[in-house]
Length: 158
Image (cartoon, rainbow, N blue to C red; front, side, top):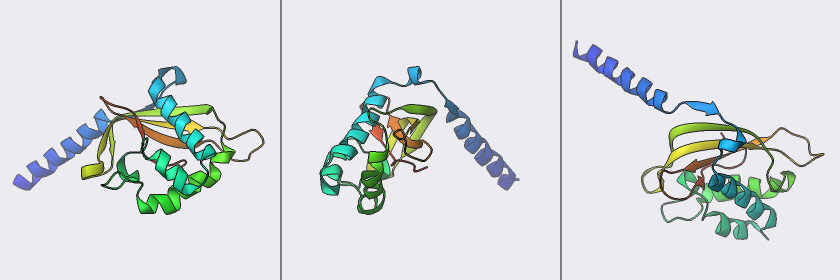
């Protein structure tokens, strides 16, 4: 009997959590200005950085969650793989960004312990430049209830 009660309570908690963090598409007019500014800043940094080290030193101020290590630096795995890919491919995206879709998830988070970052997640799809093949790619940004929004994943990552 206790096992059934535990399973019922666990299912209720998991279902309740998913109800509070539902995702829905929103219009660009509902995207907070500071979130769009961070998105544009990310693409600008990537397109104008002289090299990967320069990009890493500049993006860490707008990164959060698993993209950073506990010392606040760009995580080594992110640096060598994800950020490197974004740095090499940013030239294919429009700047200022052309937003094609936005999904919003309330009560989201990224990271763990020292890198935990919580708030509303905006997954923003951005268009490539004219003549460049490929579909728009998402950039996830979390806006906390207090403080500045931060990029929490790289271009095209889910």
